[in-house]
Length: 125
Image 1 (cartoon, rainbow, N blue to C red):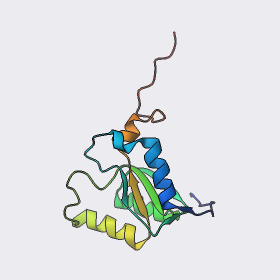
Image 2 (cartoon, helix red, strand yellow; image 1 turned 90 degrees about the vertical axis):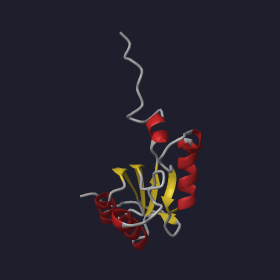
Image 3 (cartoon, rainbow, N blue to C red; image 1 turned 45 degrees about the vertical axis):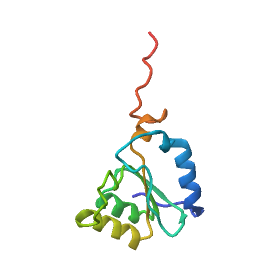
Image 4 (tube, helix red, strand yellow; image 1 turned 30 degrees about the horizontal axis):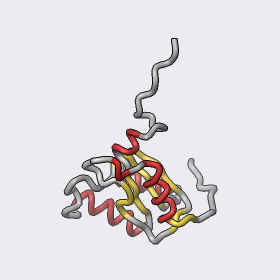
């Protein structure tokens, strides 16, 4: 079982600014709307990291007390949130009802030097 051992709260805007600067979201042309996709009431004490912004992931994040989810595949792609219905409605409602913010980073995370998806240099022979 994962437990939240952090009691310090940080402003959501500070975390978003740091992530935006580190990931250089503005440098990428991407169908994903990288960055903050859903905000909370403004403070964060626990962050959950995941691949997809699925309802199951966000529900599990709530179980550990997360108030910010950072994911690789967010909710907002192209015109995907032109209508908030079906599964997207359930996810957005769960996030807002539970004061959980959602931050997504697709291509910027792929390209980040510390990313597991960034090709590494070949080992010296």
